[in-house]
Image 1 (cartoon, rainbow, N blue to C red):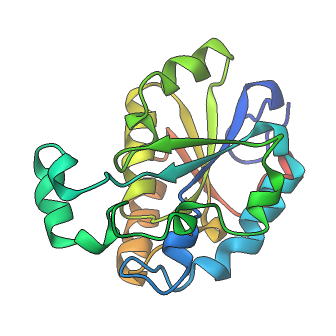
Image 2 (cartoon, rainbow, N blue to C red; image 1 turned 180 degrees about the vertical axis):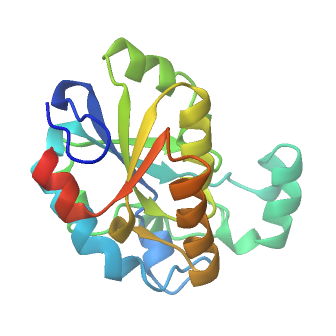
Length: 200
């Protein structure tokens, strides 16, 4: 147990939750996140140190736009090239070298922005006694945002190593980090990979 100007970190109650570090977002696709590769070393450092406590979410598009529900159907009608029918399935895989950490790290597919859109995931974490989530990956203002806000509502504390987060929008990334540091400071701790690993 360590406390150093932030949340108390208890190793047995922590999980590294890495959001959507997939080839789909790293390579030249319509959804490429150009600086994903810039934050990859920080994500690798955390996952390598805590491999058995790392879970990688994989964004799983529907087979076709018609297979999506509600507003997601309109979304995939805009991005038909990003459905599984059109995509090279290898693009849905984790980027290297993260892929080499599985197992013992684990992956879970998710059908929407939040990792908690995966049915039963939150309940599984609570059964394991997980109370704090270290969230990395992308995008800060889309899937990470959705995951963090739902995690807060579910009662988890969140630690964000900001040098292990990425977005296609620098402005949106910076605005979200400022929001987490101010309005959500009681439930979200913004830190760095180095400081996190010194404490965990």
